[in-house]
Length: 322
Image (tube, rainbow, N blue to C red; front, top):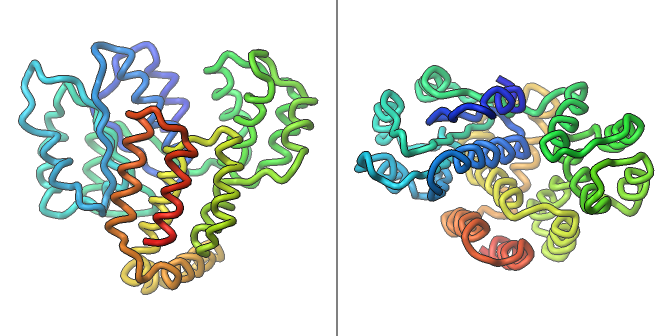
């Protein structure tokens, strides 16, 4: 089911207890996690948020968080990203939990790529599945309109055309530029064509992919500069963390996962080449430390009063020197 289609259907009803976000679009994944969490928080008492990432040694804590809860336990939102990395000895525990989920827990599980396993099959049957695959360009207008509609902001047809013409290469690019426009218009509740020309038509607009490429190629100064530009445009810490986690998971897995595969499409060949380059640059890095720091920053972004720059700039230094 499409993300926004599903969200529109459940806005006026109590949310389900288990969601499975399946697809490759990091922006849509983070949007879905945020929206589902907001809806759950809006119904009942405040909920504690816990986040886990596959492959960083937190599987025991994740499984334990799903057990030993009673009727009067506090409400929780538990997010596990890249559930296909869950250790095999914990999968039966999760599958048993899915048959009788706790009413005090909103469980959100994510997976990217084209993984096929018994766990994926179970999740597709027993959880509410939401597609977070990057949509075709023809879907961009409705996604933008839906996003703005939630904020009760209108956009002129010409302004929408200009925005999409300049950013139709990537959904994250579209929404990154849109956030800049929203900052530019301030309290005004409408976006005009002139706003798009003033913001999108100005200086170079960096995308998250530019930042990831700079980190992948181990360019420290450029990574700093692009990160600061993205932060000034309104990009928040969770999007940085999710993008970096996705990158380093693929770099870490390159020798056993990507290298043996035969690249069949131009995109597969490009990705394989990128991950090979990243592995060559980071093969001696402490990946456990990198994943730990990403998790730590993600949690701090939601629990302490530090700016995105205070969280992300030191993280970049640590990662490039891990």
